[in-house]
Image (cartoon, rainbow, N blue to C red; front, side, top):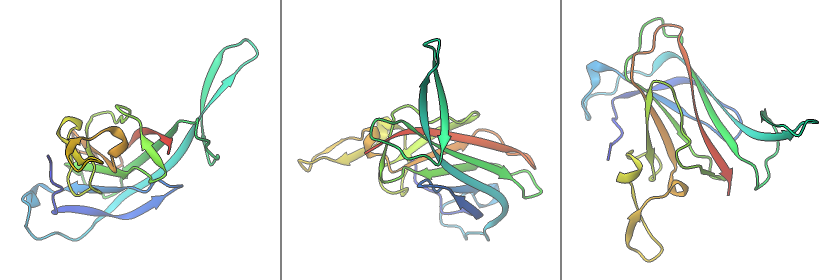
Length: 180
């Protein structure tokens, strides 16, 4: 499992929309080892998140179209999208960007739905204390024995960008969820 590195810089500005709030940690190469002093928070990363509902419409020609609607009330049959947008407004290239989003408590993560171009995805089942691949995650089952975690056990999703984020560059990462 991957332990969160305490030397990541927290984002200064964070905007949450709906139930989805997120944090971005920036890995500064000079502060790569766990246990080193944590530098001051990074200024200039703008992060916002939104919870949207997938809406299916049947058109007059019986063709099904799908829209994403923000600010709508979800029913238990709906699929939702948690989208996190991030922008580097720092004035310098940032390497090792990690975008972490909690899975809102009133929804369940849909397995294999996390997407983020140019990134790889890790998951947490312990409120973002540790992260790992699905095959690495274990939780205590109802019988008290350890079992392999399922998507319903995920508390956070983390995307690790494969390349540096240029000045002014933006990105969007997403995952789907369903109401509990």
